[in-house]
Length: 552
Image 1 (cartoon, helix red, strand yellow):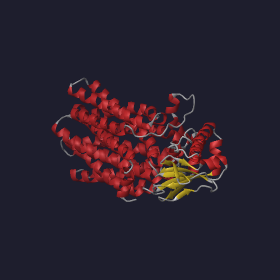
Image 2 (image 1 turned 135 degrees about the vertical axis):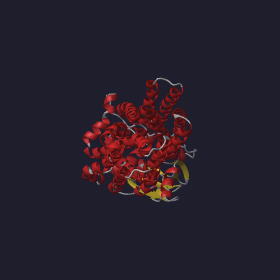
Image 3 (image 1 turned 45 degrees about the horizontal axis):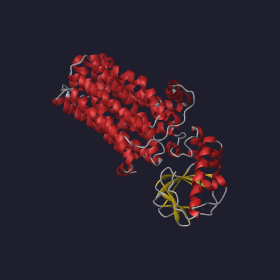
Image 4 (image 1 turned 90 degrees about the vertical axis):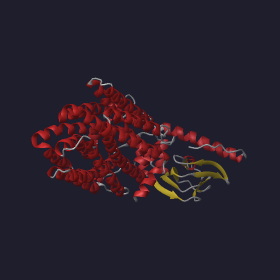
């Protein structure tokens, strides 16, 4: 896909577009208040105070992230996103007001800690909702690329905005403005359709469900190098958040506004890296772009540490930011490809905990590295982190890249259909793996009345009409199902199905369809209800009545 095709594929979907625009606001507000709080702390106690405040924010976030991550699995993910954004806005608003009122430091930090903890709701819920909004695996990869581009663009916008605000005002204004931005994100996501929550094991406690992400990683060792790599990325980011303050003020002798500008250069590199990452759409294997990203990111900070200057730092932060995006997109996409649907939110909740832990670990490392070798040595040490880990996990990462892939888009489509929504996760995944993608042009006959029924069809994109002797019985779009009557009753096709627009379908052969439907009582009941609806339409049409406008 070209750059234009990738963005068109995502932006033409109204709901994907709204989720991505809300994610822009999330990233801008998250990065801006993080930088503002570090600057606030640094002004009161230097590097140690900034690192301590970072840890104070990250520890609760890391502890609560597995519990907050499971919300997207248990409740409608869009609703979880809305309330997550509202909670973030509340935390930011309280922090800004506390700074204006010169409240005690514990009160100020409490607001920031609450906002940082609420941040952990967003990415897991978004990881759950994205496969249901994407209409094909390539579209899901494209959405991941756009999301990563949004993350880095958010960093760029936040860095510039924070630098400008800090040059003319104080940190309180940053928190106030970003609270409004977070509320705008909540408004954008409100009303986006959610996939139905996956069935959970009866009797499992909230703690047990929250720990499902840990259990998935324990029982699936192939997930460990991906989580470890993403953890290392965020250790680096956590270290850089503090190092940018040290680099700007102590090493380069610049004023505090340059903390924002250095962050902006890092974000601008991510924007460029996001454009490069578009070439990953459609790639069967992602280990090569991940390796390239590791090399670019590592080399950039080693060189900055060896030759610190404003010009060198600005240029190489562009390079390092681009490399970081390649690593992030590749590892996150592999994690989605290899994680079972029923624990996807919880695994990403665990990842969110790892992110927060990584930010805290990175922030704690900086004073130690600076004390041992100075700021330049700290930059070199931070730059070596990803390359060293990359060499350690190279073989398992290659095995993951070449291993089986979980069909997350197909699972999300099936889960949205009443016929299959109650199926247990292993059975649903088995059906998803058996689906065969098909495409039909507008006007093409997908099913012809009287033919032998051998397949069931799920509509992924576009619209079809079900017609009986020329009369339209119903019009179906994404999530609709056709062809089930002939399979369940072992009769010839009872109506024509014609593509009204270009359509993308998934076909399921008769044997796996019948095994899934007849072998699970709730699904069998749903199938009988669907057949009753179809028979009613046929009877009404045969009697010359107006057909019911039912749809699945």
